[in-house]
Image (cartoon, one colour):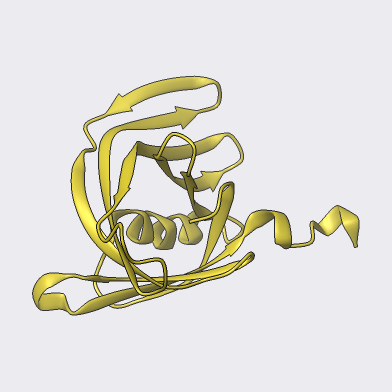
Length: 141
């Protein structure tokens, strides 16, 4: 799934927790960002939704491949979120965030990935992400 932070650029369909928090955060701060990081070394997963400078929420856990023999997309992944944390201007507060979900990796290359997941009666959620390190920073321009 590629290491490092991947920024959410587009979502459609049913709700996902970080998608919902991302949308709500954009009302407070249009420059906020939602991101995910999947570390292939230790299989850790980290979702992050930023609301303002110094204010963000994380949800962390692990992930596993569902089709070990399959090397091409689409590929099933299960994320197991164990805990959440509110980070507010140097303070941290644990949040009761946990759960498991399955999604499919529809496309993946060095800078772009596309996921989909079934949201029950709400339909399918599609998420497009870009690797953060591939996006030029404003101070570099």
